[in-house]
Length: 449
Image (cartoon, rainbow, N blue to C red):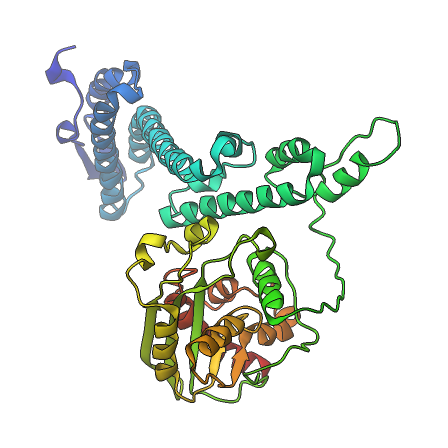
């Protein structure tokens, strides 16, 4: 076909007029014949990823043709008061002629965009999963790794990256658990984990594996998350041992609460949110592989805070600290704070002194601070010779008190921020957590009244 015969929008001219009782489409046969010849080029072209630019050009042209015909149809409907059903029917026929190649090309472009996004996601996954060593490919190759919602146009890059980071962090934690409890069943437990990217059913597996029963036991990896229980323990230990234990629990996915606290206290806890002026704070810390493994205690690497006066944020505090030890890899992935970032920062002693100057005598507010943040602050202050005896309020117990009435699934800070529609600029960074927590405090204040 001659290039001049290829259909284009500017050559689409509808000649129609109204006479009493009738609307005529004078050049319908000619226009239909022209479109049939022109559209045959699109209908016979095989569109692939290799000629994507041509596909994008053709899609643009077909959309222009469809729009011109649709606009003309609307124009006639508006302009003519007499029935124009015949002309409408004829225009619909022409519009449907465009629709077939248009939809084909449109689908190709959308599928290619998804394929490109999938490649971007997997490249990110492989790069960040490299910390898992030899098990990286097994994790990202698991049937339960890739979430199809990541391909949705509305699912932002930061969201699927956060999902992947969380999977890698949980996998790293799971491998540590397997090393601790797996015994001679470590390989089997890893295989169990790769199947669902979860250790659900691991306890049952180990019990069955250690049984003296000679029968072949079929292991089940059923989801036990629906069954929630609890144990009440009274644990005795030194301040250091307790801090280690509470840090490990805080870093785990388990929900826990302190029913009774018999440890010596330097800071008084406030239970009622009756005030509107305070300092809301959060810390990030190095994490620890465990004192029992010969690793040092966890140390502060960041303190972030906002000063609130009569319900308004009036000042901010954010300092990184050199902890004097390495940051545990999973903490670095979670917070995006690296050893290089804190290498030239002030010591924890210096930062805690600056923080005390910022706080003054104000009440401290934070989320889940009783078990982790307050012990870290108290220990750092004692070591630096700072009298840190401020009162504090933990917003986690407040949230727990209204969880059932609100129908909340969780009471994490991120969950509460999303529930109340609050912007959480950077999750797991102290300055961002502190700012959003201050706003959550006032929402919880209203909820518990």
